[in-house]
Structures are given as structure tokens and as C-alpha cells.
Length: 322
Ligand SMILES: [Ca+2]
Ligand SMILES: [Ca+2]
Image (cartoon, rainbow, N blue to C red; front, side, top):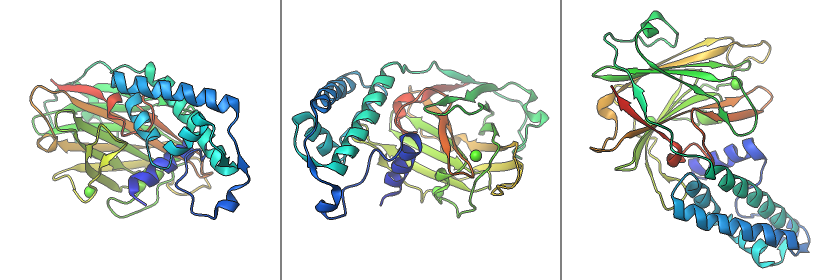
């Protein structure tokens, strides 16, 4: 299974339960009795297909949700609901779950507009990278909050941003009572546990860096290209960002469920020369957080309104360096 498929499945299940599943790999008779969709299913599916058509027209956040609907293990179930075609009970349940998730995503996407451009101030002196809120950050900086959550409210994490000629600096302070962050190799799947994710996207080339930082000190840096016409894109975790600096500082015991943690800090310095940039285009930023707790519960939160998953580039915020 591709990493990105694993991610969307885990992210989807985290948010809504297992409503989208891969193609059946069990005998058809194990999928329950043959069942015909109800009249209500057909009506809901018709509405969904209307929403899908609208998403194609307005090229906004709903496009990536629509791309999701066209996945080969999702669309056939939706068509069966619309057309009233007989399905096995488990297939019907899954198709209904997917329909509900996609319908809500497309409705939510209608209220998402592109965020206003964020100005990132220039600092005169270097910021030391130690994962802590030191006096280095007393100078000019932008501050936003990671607070847009689909399901479960978590305390906002603060994001401070500044730059000089060489680096884009960031400090993310995350309140978290249960820090869960397995120690993995670089580019390991840290996005299934507590981590901070930073996306820097160039709409000209559709290239973007995805930088995931865990409170165990692990980084996953991957250079991606978004495919606007289908869900996801090309992911290159084998690329490592030259000169990237990062640090973590936990206030609590990471991976120890016996105590209550306070939270953690992630600080980074991204060499500006590494950013994909097309003249005349604003770079786009998206800062997000995966929260996972010792109970296995979790949430996905970002600094601007979003829908679908974190690779929905239509939700990213334009930024400008002062
Ligand atoms: Ca890498
Ligand atoms: Ca956590």
C-alpha cells in the first residue's frame, strides 16, 4: 500500500471512522446478503453528484474532496447508490459512509475561501534553534494559531514565523497532555502520531515541501508535486532538504502514559533557497498538527480552515517575506 493511501485511510478513520475502505479482498459471500440501496440512498447520491459537479466548476477546496470521490475503490459504490444497483451489505455500508463523509466535505468546502496573504517579518539577528520560546522571538514575527479542527476541539497551538536573508524560521508551541511519538528513522511514518506538519507550496510548479517534525526529534521531509486533477500527487520522501535545521523540546515524558504532559515545542530554520518559487506567484503555507493520545484517540488540526486532508493545496495561505 502506498504511504499516501495509508495516510488517508488512517486520517479518514481518525476523523470519521472507517467509512472508506480499500477494495474487498474477502470472498463476496462474506460481505453479507445482497441488498438494494434505499430510495433515500438514491436521493443522497444524486445530491452528492450535483455537489461534485459544482466542485469541478469553482476550483476551490472541494476539488480535492471530489478527487477523493473518484478513487477507484470509492466511485463504484457511489454510482451503485445513485443507480439503485444491488450491493452486498458491507459494500452498501461502506458506500453510505463514504457518501456521508464526501457530502459533508463538499458542503464544508463551499464556505472555505482563500486566506488573506500573511506577511512574515524580517529579523535582524539569527534565531537559535532549540525548540523553546527564547528571547530570540522578542523581535518582529508573525503569529498564527493551529486551531481549525474537524471533529474534536483541542487547545490551539501557536505558530511564530520570521525570516532573514537565509532562513524562514518557525516555532510551534503545542499544548498536549499525552505526547505519543515513536522514535523512527528519518522519513518514517511519524504522521500517524503526534507531530507538526509544515507545507510550503508553489502554485506555479505545483511543487511543495512537506516537513513533518515529531516531538521525539524525528523529521520526515518530502518533496512533492500536487496533481490537481486527481487525488494526491507525487511524493518523494527520499529527498532530504539541504541545510534544514530543527529541534524539539518536550515538557513531559514522551511515550509514557503514566503521567500528564504539558506539551512540546518544535522549532525549525528552512533555507529559503530550497523553496520552490515561481516569479509572480505567492508561496503558500499550511501548518498543521496531528494529535494522538495514549488511548489511540486523536485529531487533525490546521492553521487555516481546511477540508479533506492536509494535501488540499486549495486551502493553503499565501505568504510574503517582508
Ligand atoms: Ca526525506
Ligand atoms: Ca498527543
